[in-house]
Amino acid sequence: MRVQILIILNFFFASCLFGQQLSYKGLLVDSLLITTYSQKYTYHPPIDKQPKLKRRSDYYSIEFNKEKKNYQVANNKRIFNEIILDFRKGDVNLVESKKKERKNKNNIGKVICHEDIDSLINAFTLKYKQPSNTNLGIDSVMLLNYITENKFDENYHWCDAQCYRAKFYTNDEEKKAIINDCRNLDTFNVYLKIMFDTTGFIVSDGDEDEICFNIFASGEVFFYVGKYPNAFKQPWYNYSDMSDGLPAPIFNLDINKYLARILPEEFPIKKKLEISGLFDDYIKWYLMYFKWNDEW
Image (cartoon, rainbow, N blue to C red; front, side, top):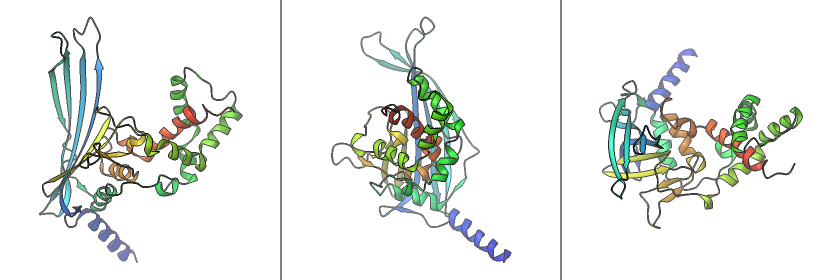
C-alpha cells in the first residue's frame, strides 16, 4: 500500500513539473513575464533642490525549456530609479540621476508547476466569473479562522486613523457583535457584490502600484494589467483587445489565486493577490463603508 502511494505521489509531481509546451489561444506559450511598478514623489527643501521621483520595478520571467520539457524561472530582478523633475526651463524635464539593479539568483532555474501555469493563462480567457464565496472556495470556517480579534484590531486601527479617530464601538459587547457580523458569509458576499460591480472600475493612466502580466506565444504578445485603485487589482485589463477604444476588462479572481501560487514569497504585491489580502480589504471595507453607513 505504501509503495502504491509513493508511485501515485511521484506521478503527480512529475505531471505537475514536466509536460508538453502549453498553448494559449492556439499558440504555443514560450514565456511569461510578470512585472510590478511602484513610485513616490519626494521633495524636502532645502536638502532637495528639485523634486525627485523614486521608482521601483520588479521583474519575474518564466520560460519553457524544450530539452527538459518544463517551465523555469529565467529572470528575477529589481531595478531602482531616481529621476529628477526639472521645472527650471518651463517644461518638465525628467533626468535620471541614479539607477541600481539587484538580481535574485536563488530563484533562477526554479521549475514552475505546469498545472498552475495552465490554470493561470486559462483564467485570462474567461472575461467574467461571478464573485461569490462559493466560487472563491471560501466558507464560514475560513472567515472565522482569519478574522480573529487581533486581525480585526489591526485593520480597525488603520480605519480609526483614516476616520480621524472615529469610534465604531464603545464597549466589548459591541466590539464582539461587530466582529461576528464581519465573519458572516452574507456580509462578505455583499462586499463582493458592491466592490466588484463591474460598472464602477477605474482605468488609470498611471502605473503606480500596478501589476502587469505578459504571455509570449509563437511571436504574439498578450498584455494584461491589474491597476490601482481597484480592489484586489480586479478587473484585469486586456491591452491586447482595444476594440472599444479602451482595454477590455477581465473579471476573474482565479487570476490572482494562480498568480500568487507562481510568485515567490518575497515578490512585492504578492500578499495583495492572496486571499488574505482580500480578507484585509474586506475588513477595512466593513468598517469604513458598511458600519459607517449603518446607523446602529
